[in-house]
Length: 488
Image 1 (cartoon, one colour):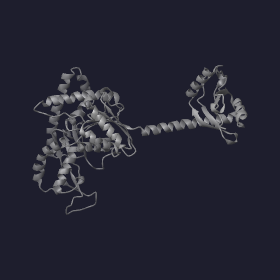
Image 2: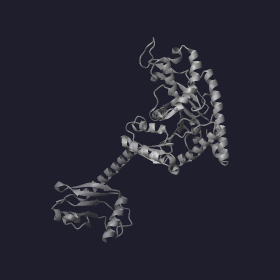
Image 3: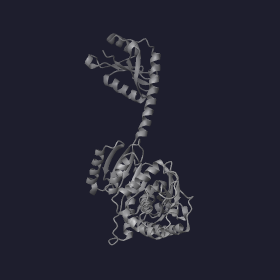
Image 4: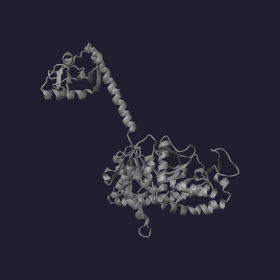
């Protein structure tokens, strides 16, 4: 026959009122069941507040009163039991012996010691479970303009574990307008069918007010379709500003404090990053970057074709300036690995690019002139290249970039390389320990420095247009912008 289960409790009933209330109840409350040999084993501990409330409710329901901290046990109704009973330790032991033929010679003090141990074990177990839950909470990834082809290509890269790690679960939130709700639902269903082990969940969102809730990472993919014959550049910049004016306050309100924001896409990535920083004063500027990796890898591929080698062996190409606008691809620090030439070495052996391409005319004419077609190719790609670029930068941001390698990203300038402060400018960085660092130790030649001055002027003009549009849209928002500018 099954034994009864009981609640073994230590309290200060002697100092409490007749109805058991009014005193500070001990935190020690546990459930107990008898073992073979007449000994009792406590199975579960309860926090004091939980016991006190439960005890009050039970006594009130049954019309019971008690003067000391009692034991409440139960009998199985389907075995003929009477339900819940109340009494002291002796009452319980007498009942158990009479009904089940089970008794215990354990003193009350010993039972209380067991209850103390159980409480401590329970507290430690709860703490351990909470730590495990904290470790296993999925990263919350939000993607804007999620109906874009880039997002479709990006999701599998994020969900396979290659970006955030093979033990990190993620939840993906797709944000777009009502117009694309059916597209988002289709993406959600398809991704769910793929059953990624590390994908805790994926959902679609069209209500902008609830955007970025508890976000750890936000990927801004919003692009403006450029038709210069229809609208002026100023109008496009205004549209970008309006989008960021909506996003930035929501990021401040809903996202986690140290949220990381990546500006990606095919148009105005520098401007989007700058306007999010401008409109979101509490957003850490170091946590907002613009992705330049698509142009970087496309340039590497072009050089690899010239050298008839694998593009993975081309390192340290630098993209300066306005990533999706006027930029300069700097090859002065580029190194070549594993190139099939007369001079060979180990895997870490490299040679400067300029020592391998003897046709300097190709570098200064054909390669530079090909940059416009390079940009056109990147902007008109199906989405695989920019998706790979976003995934690569995120992987570096969370796990560090390869030692010694240069990565180009757009960041808020603080005067590095004589670039004016307050503009988002693509420059060389390294990622380590979850953050990035500008590689200010790099030497810049005269040609590059002239290019930086020209590119800075272009970005300053774009910023001035954006701020002018902001003032027109929000004539009382000037203080907010000025304050942000002064803090950097």
